[in-house]
Amino acid sequence: MTALTCARCGRTDAPALPRPPLPGKTGLEIRQTICTDCWAEWQKMEVMVINELRLNFMDPASQVTLEQHMRKFLYPGAGEES
Ligand SMILES: [Zn+2]
Image (tube, rainbow, N blue to C red; front, side, top):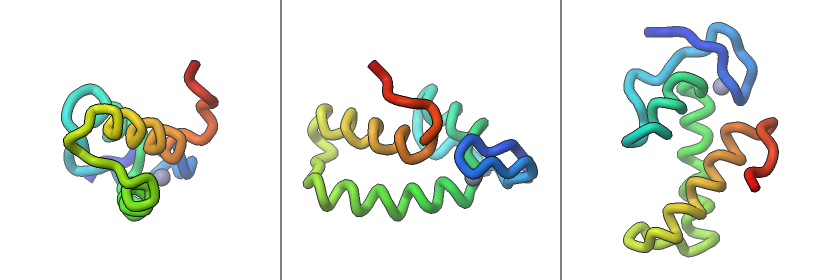
C-alpha cells in the first residue's frame, strides 16, 4: 500500500486508495491527494447529499452538483471556485 500526505486530514503517512475511485482526471487527482479514510467518509456523506438534494445520476447537472459537494468535502481549504 502506498502512503501519501492527505489534502483533507493532513496525515503524512495516510494510506492511498488502491486505485482511482472515479474515472478520468478527478479520480487520479483524488488518488494522489486523498487517503482511504477520507474517501470512505465522503462515500457516507455522498449518500446523504444524494438523498437530501434528490440527485439523479442520469442528469448531468446532478453530477456537477455532486462533484462540487465532493470537492468542498475533500478539499475544505481550497476555497470556492469561481
Ligand atoms: Zn485523509
